[in-house]
Length: 131
Image (cartoon, helix red, strand yellow):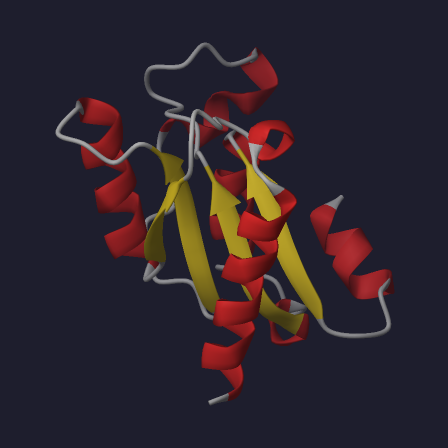
């Protein structure tokens, strides 16, 4: 469905993905001819498909794509620390070439994220993409 939505959109896009959808964006970027339409991506709290329960249809994500994304991106994660989730987020950010950003407060998803925080990250990405 991501391919269809991007193909059918007339202009440039900023992708915002959460959880397992972050892995969809990374895998999609390896083969899509629509990648030039993506200005940037914000990847929020990527799921751990090896540990998090996933549906049988999502089992293909157990081995995530770990290549550098062909567009600027930020990986937003709650509360950077010394735990396993932070280590995994750092590894994904490095593999994807993403800027690692700590989500303010206790937000663990898009719904808990202050809109101005997401907007500020998008604006920084777009400024970096055009400069």
